[in-house]
Length: 261
Image 1 (cartoon, rainbow, N blue to C red):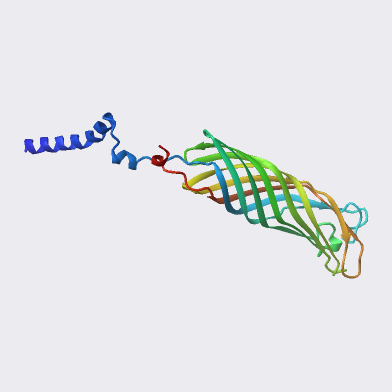
Image 2 (image 1 turned 180 degrees about the vertical axis):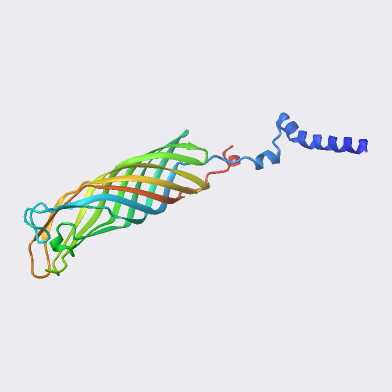
């Protein structure tokens, strides 16, 4: 019994010591090679898509009396459009040690919208006012720090968005419509994290704060009985968005370590 146990212990010790002996002799064993993985390389051109949700705070002001307001009455209202967003992005990264610098262009279609009914006066309690953020784009610079397959980053830059403001009168005096489409400019700042799921595939999550500057626009109302001027000063839009991201690296896969020797 003792000799059997001793023989088993010697066999186990030989199994454990064989890789160490091979390393001491300068001979690479197959077993350690199979456990060695190359760190993620974040340099290169990525394309991908993102989707998530967003909410915003904004509002309208009629700078002069209009068909939808009372003389010397309330002319302003708040609006909080919210909804889903989906889009695509192109990212160019360059890694220097653990630091990653880059630039990104992202375009998002938006389903963010909000409606207010009769916000200006109880005399026109059926008037409807809709604020819709139809799309927005971001052009940003990025600075990140790579920890193996994980990249943490912050970004910031230019933002632009398309906003539609629509007013529709209800009874009494139904049928008057005012509509303005605005292209607003602004800035953005945010950050996120990405994980290199495979050699050329990254998954991530990102937060963006976007501020679009409001502006005054004018057109004519349509419908009956009025074709009065429709003049709107849109307020600044503060938008908060959280998106999940999928990015594909277009560069060829990194060469294996043996090919670089």
